[in-house]
Structures are given as structure tokens and as C-alpha cells.
Length: 207
Length: 126
Image 1 (tube, rainbow over the protein chains, first blue to last red):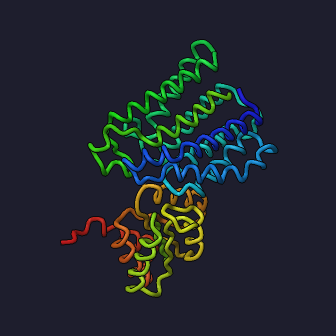
Image 2 (image 1 turned 90 degrees about the horizontal axis):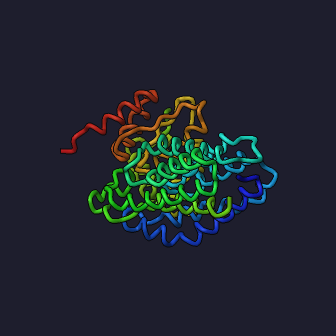
Image 3 (image 1 turned 135 degrees about the horizontal axis):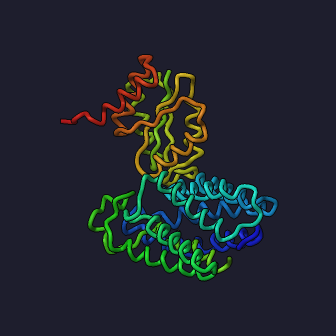
């Protein structure tokens, strides 16, 4: 699926895509949150860019851990500790590896979900990034286990994540700042579910 | 003496709470960790770490947070300092920090400080 070079390529795309989408993500957050999701995430990934030149000499686990720590210390909003935890847990999982396969990626999504659930004290159905992450993980796992086709599995994952975004429009936010809005949060998609999907798409496109 | 750290998305809010609590207990070591390093809104892992370092002693530190990432970022800071005596307090930031500052100045232990501050959660305002 990916070696160190490929992982760096994917990270590069995520940095560029987050930067490109930062105003859109922030706009989504303006409606139901405090309007900083895109700006915060872009600041975090900009900071990741400054340490990118150290990645080539690292294994995949060390790269992901370094990204997680950078996000925690630079994002400033809830997505910092949440994505930071996800990357750090993934880093611990892939510690020492210079190659990863689809099973590693599926396991990486699982430890990320577990980490985010614990950090955010959140479950599925609360209008958060988990509403894209959990269906994406489940779809990728089911598809890959059925026929071992990685490309097909990632396509299924992105489709499930996008459906997850649509699902967040239909439910009331019960976590984070958006929960203060109650019913008024219905009709708006969750910025976290959207940013996760953006990252997964980078994997789908390049892996 | 037990030290106190106030974490908020807003630099002004964190500093204001420390300022208010200092009026009641100027001798209690207290530090605000509000906003980002550039002064913008948000919570900063570095700022919280530095604030703890500044007020830390063997008596420990009680931390008061506003919402969301203030809580999560503080949790992550604490996970990086597992050998230290630090407690996050689940209570209203202003009331809790003032109560904590006063009992800390009186020489209370970290457990006592946390207990008194946490009781502010149940206290009716009128």
C-alpha cells in the first residue's frame, strides 16, 4: 500500500488540500461552531510542513507520531487534540515500519477512532468526525476482507465517509460548541466529518 | 503551596480569572494559560505546559479549564507529565479558581483544594 515515500506524498497532499479548503471548513464551522476549524487545521498542517524535511529519515510510525505532536501543539482548537491523538496512536501502531499494507491502514483507522472516542468522550451519532470515520473504517474493512482489492476498499471508504457527512446534516449536535445550538444545528454538515473525508480522499487518490 | 493554572480559549478571560482570584489570595502561585502563542483564540499545549512549570511545587497544581479543547489539550499536557501531582477540576472556572486560591493560601493540600473548588459546581448563586 505505502512506503515512507508514499506516506510523505500523501501527507503533502493533505497539507495542500487542508490549506485549499480552509475557508470552506471554517465557513461550515462558522454556522454551528466557533468558526475556526479550517484556519486551525491549516495552521497545524502548515506547522507539519516545517518538519517535513525530517520525515525521509524516519519510519512511518515516527512520522505519524511527529505529525500528531505537531498538531496538538499548534492547532489550538478541538481538532488539535483529536486529530493529534489519532496520528499519535497511529504512530504507536506503526512504530518501526517502513512499509504499511491495507490491514495496517484498517487497524490505523481503528486505533484513531478509539483514541478520538476516548479523548472527546464521544460516540457515533453526535455529529462529529466519528460519523464519517466509523462508517469509512467499516466499509473499507468489509470490502477489503471480501475480495482483497485495496483500491475498491478505499473507494468504498470514501463513499461511506461522504454518506457520513450527509448523515451529520440530519442530526442534532450533542458534542462540542455546536451542541449549544440544539435543533438549529440540523441541516448543517459537521466540519470535522468533512475534514476527515478530505484526508481520506488524499489516501484514496495516492495510495 | 498548591499552585493554580487557568486555561481558556481567551487570553483575557484566563488573565481576568487569575486577576480576580489574586485579589483574594495574592500569595497563591497562579498563572493564566489563555489563547494561542500568537495571542489569538484557542488553547496552546506549550502555554499550558509553561504555566504549570511556573507554579509547580511538590504540593501540586490544580487546573481550571473552560470548554472543549481547553479540557482536551490540558489532558494531553497532563499525560506528558504523569509523574507530577496535578489535578484538573470539573467546576465553574471563576468560582472554582477563587475558592481554590483562597484555600491554597491557607495551606490546604491539593486534595482539599480540589474538593473545595469542585463544591462550587453545586453552589446556587441565588
